[in-house]
Structures are given as C-alpha cells and as structure tokens.
Length: 240
Image 1: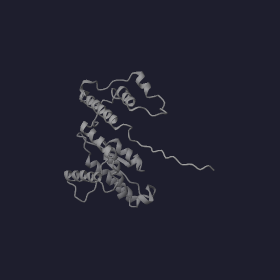
Image 2 (image 1 turned 120 degrees about the vertical axis):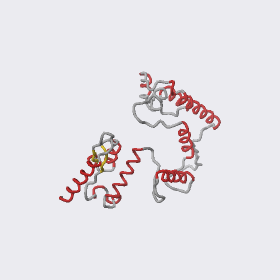
Image 3 (image 1 turned 45 degrees about the vertical axis):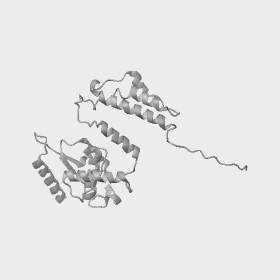
Image 4 (image 1 turned 90 degrees about the vertical axis):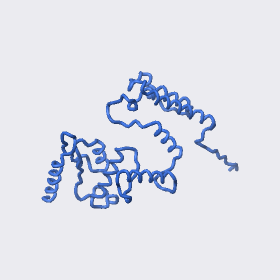
C-alpha cells in the first residue's frame, strides 16, 4: 500500500464575496420595498401566461444557480402573480398579509437563527417575554404557560391535543389513543373553523368527535342546545 497524505477540503455556506453579497441583499430589499409600495397600483390578481406556467415544470438543476438568476426568475415569474391578499382591494376572505416591518423581523430572526427549544440564550428569553406580555394582556395568571406558533391552525391543534391528554384519564403519551377507556368528544358552534376538524383527525380521535352545536341569528352558539346535547351524552354513558 502506498503511503500518502490525506487532503481535507473545507466546505462552507458563506458567500465567496461578502461585499458582493451585501450589494445583492440591498437589491433584494429595494425590490421588496417597490413591490409593497406599489401594490395599490397593481391588479389584485392576474392569470399567468403559458410560458410562466411552463417555467414551473422545468426539471431540477444539477448545478448551482447564480443568485442573480434565481432572483430574476422570482421577479419575473412569481411576484407578478400572487394570490392577491396583500392588495387592499382583496376582499374575498380574511387572510393576514403581514407587514414590511414584520418581514424585516423574520429576516433578522433567520439571521440570528437560535433554536428556541431550550438553552440559555437571549432569543429564548425574548420568546418567554412575549408570552408573558400576552398573558398579562389577557388576564392570565403568572403561573400560566404558553408558546408562540405559526398561526391559528397550529394553535388550535395544540390546544385540542392538551385537552385530549388531560381528559383522557390515562397517560396518553405512554399508552396512546387506543388505550382511552371511553370516546372523547368536543363541542363547538356550527360556525367552527375547519382546522378543528382536521386537528381531531390528526390527534387520532376522528372528525366524528367534533359535535357541532347550532348557532343563532347572531352566529353565537345556542347554549340551550349545547346543554341538551351534553345531558343526552351523559345519560347515554350512564345507561351504557
């Protein structure tokens, strides 16, 4: 066997030229400012030409692509054809559009890059601080806990999961949903969002566990109807 020296090749995700990267970043931010600032002058929505649709069917590239090319593709084939929800004339349904300040916050959060699952770091303390602020605003006790998530769907899923775990009567994290001694159900107005049904499917209870209660002319839950349904279920459980 011939002796030789091993060669170590260092790989990095850093750009080759930080000054060039900074210049490109400024270009992206300038484009973003123009995109938001002129949103009122653009149509809410417009259909894509065939050539734009075809651009989303090209095979994946085998080689790295220059950032300028990727940004040009986005500028030509993505930004002109949005859903339209950031346009002030978008009145189809509620959908948060965010803000430019929030976008900068997302950028800085990605740059800082801390894992908030634990650890002694400033980002984790800030996360806890915001939760404590919200607790104070809503009148929750200091002993309450909370977490920040991506949106309402995940928030409701977590809340329903906690309710399932607490009311299951078993150590569900150890034994699983199959060990729940009696079927669980959740009551909600017939105006409830579809995310609750999906959440119950995801946590293993099935969409039949969601019992929808009629609402009145003000779209509020009919409390008397709720009481009757709960009483009927209690009687059924006692008989069984």
